[in-house]
Amino acid sequence: MVLKAESVRNRVAIVFMALLLCVTLRSQDTPHQPPAPPAFDQQSASRLLLQLSESLQGHSQKQFFALFDLSRMKDGQLFKQQATSFFNQTESIRVHLNLVDTSADGDKANIAVDAEMEAEPRNGGPIARRNERLNFVVANSGNGWKFIDVQSRSFFSLP
Image (cartoon, rainbow, N blue to C red; front, side):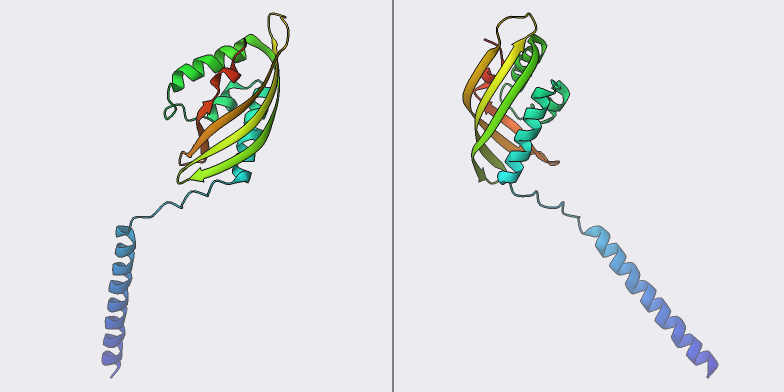
C-alpha cells in the first residue's frame, strides 16, 4: 500500500512538472507586445514646448537636438546646421512659447505655437526679436514624442 501511494505521488509530480514546463515554453513562444505609446495630448505638447524653451534659454544644443528626430525630418541635417549656427552666433536667448492648438492623427500630431524670441548676438549687434506662429509635427519615436518638422525654420536663425 505504501508503494502505491508513493507511486501515485510520483506520477502526479511528473504530470505537474510536465504541465509547468508546457506553460513556461508557451509563454516564451508568445512575443511580448511593447506597451502602446501614450496618446498625444495638450500635456504632452506643453511638456515638449517647455523642454524646447529650456534648451534654448539654457543655450544647450545637446538638449535642443535631443527633442528632434532629425533622421525622420525632411532636410534634418540642414536644419541641424542652421540651428547649430544660430546657437554659435548668439550670446543669450529668451523665448516664450504659447501653445495655441494640438491635433493628433494616429502616431503623429501637430502643434501650433505663438512664439516670441529675443536673441542677443555674440558680436554685440542689436538684439534680434521674432514673433511668429510656429507649426510643429511630432511623432512617437519609441521612447517618447519628438519633433519631426517645424515651420518656419527661419525662426531658429539670426537675420
